[in-house]
Image 1 (cartoon, rainbow, N blue to C red):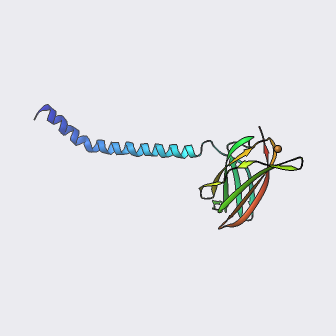
Image 2: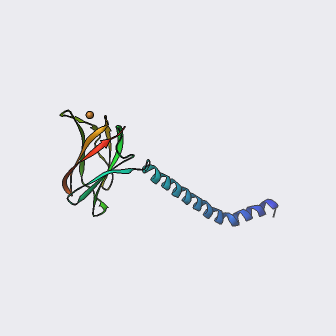
Length: 154
Ligand SMILES: [Cu+2]
């Protein structure tokens, strides 16, 4: 037996442990990646802007900042019933500001369902001041609507 053979045997006897070690490393890498994904999806952290109730449905408006900012706001709307998120079907959002009798609408994207009872929507509010946000929904939990004031800051 050469010195080279004995080194190979030694490596083989330890191979199993190394393989287990490699699997453990891979599992921990996946865990780190998953944790990274989870963190990214919540980044930037959302804060509660307002909440409102319509019947049994409680609605929470979340955004990167409260109050909402002039220009673009990447909002999330959550619908809850008895503390749990519930799907409410189709959601529509309208923002408006009353200026000298004439209402001015903000630009709002079509709300996108990102999870059970959770919808992402962008609101572009061109001016600072007092806006009204109206959220309508229509689905398995029935129809509902809430309107609440939102002061928009620069
Ligand atoms: Cu205005």
